[in-house]
Image (cartoon, rainbow, N blue to C red):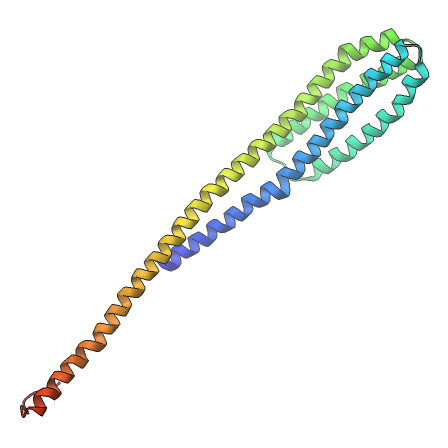
Length: 219
């Protein structure tokens, strides 16, 4: 029984290790990558908006210079996205990945269109694109990324809760196994001691009787 309880406790320790690996090895890196993508997205929107303001202020050249930074951030986002997509993912995550990709595909043409209008000197039309379909698409894109981060955070909490529960069960089983082993050890020691001492007492009694002249005694 002690062996069985010890084996079960060791199996629980393996499960605890797995849950902690899921938190440290998968979920946290995914959260970091998703956070970087959200930062890039917000920065792109800020830059596009700033470009429109520059164009409205009579600085179309300054507005177009912003495009280079937008392209750089896009490249960084895409690289981060590729890293995220290579990591193991649950079916729920894969569904969110599709949603993220759909919103990205819907937004980028509007971003390109905004810069095309800025380049053509049509700042007012560019602002209309930015305030209209581009802003709406970015909100959907940001919401999809946010839902992914929240899903990962929920998974983290669930993994941690499971690890805590398994830890408590493992500690209880190990304490029970130790207590049982102690009780069995004491019981075994008592039985062994009695099996030795009782024959010795009988032998001593026989020897005492013989010494007293009673030769009818035997062990």
